Image (tube, rainbow, N blue to C red; front, side):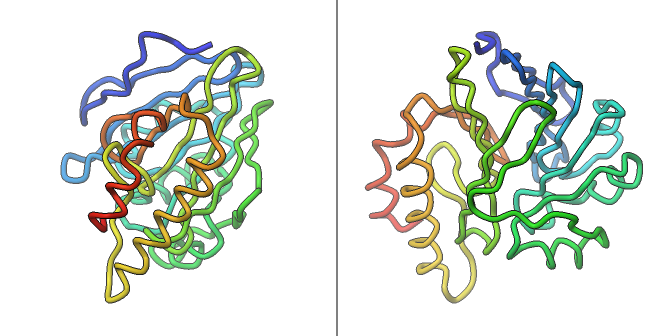
Length: 229
């Protein structure tokens, strides 16, 4: 079941927001005043094992949240603001580093940290006894990944960690001379792999800002495609 007191509204320097599911705890915290990135610590309630989604910044904020069970850090994509604390977190914990295969080399070049597992569509990531499914979404970056946790068997929701591929109000930005084509690729992937496979009740957690549900955003897909961003 889902903790009804969770809102997903966090501020840099403020307290984390915690969502208690039947087998998984989701802790959301915002870091860095400039970029206001969201980091998500996922904890298996059976084993205590943890996975951190985006060691974005402020190791002094992230490290006290961790136990000695940090199994992995998943970096959702290669952009600099999502991995500034990666070297510090991995240096202290020895956690594995996971990232989408097309973004892995860039992450290593930018952070000096070797990606130990390169993720592709259909892979899974273990959080103790819990399982996350990997969705590969191109366009924002070549190797962005989203992660799905299915809590429906326990009367809960699907929970989707989208990085910068999907926000309330639209998909992530695209850049460069091919930004229009990349936007189409990104929206196609989001429509097909996210809205096309997951129910409207799915709660999603983006890389910046507040959360939403797929049902709240689905009516706007045609509008996003028409406006081109």
